[in-house]
Image (cartoon, rainbow, N blue to C red; front, side, top):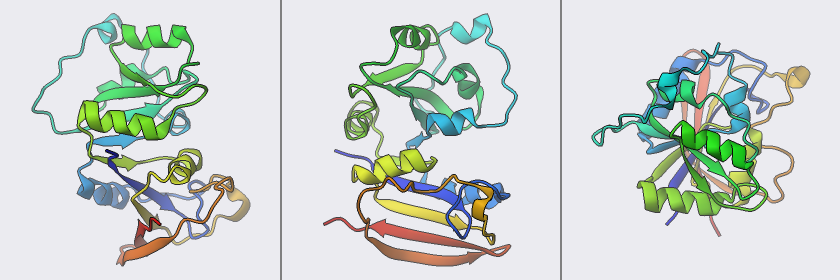
Length: 219
């Protein structure tokens, strides 16, 4: 069984993700309503975060103490190339109860060893890149993930849409046209087919924001 997947993005009127100031308060207040079991974030999104990352310490390599009653979401990052090296920092943040990496059969063994030493669980699925349909099924069956909020850039959004994995799209539209100030789109031009949508709601949010929700129409 596939979990329900919601794409939730803050966008400009011309569907860019960067080049403008996002109202993070409204964005995350809306995101909280889904009470997702997992937050799916692309590796590029993680690596573009401006935070200053503290170095690893010996304590980061100790097994984490997990609470079975913890209802926070899992942080799930597809990273077949082994680019994310800040897992210790991500695990320390208060937003998620634990982290899972999605990797492929060609992910470097050194990276898998690194994840194991940090006690970061990982799912191997796919040959050259992560097989997203298979990964989402494993998340549902092995980790009881029924709802995923995708907080992603255009590449991962497009991959999810291309594989027919998205159930709902949520856009918090900001009152700005970015134009050539950014090339980062909510959906890339590589999406090979139209995706038909049904409008669920359109709501004006203060100040001058519009929240659009669409259901993905399946054939």
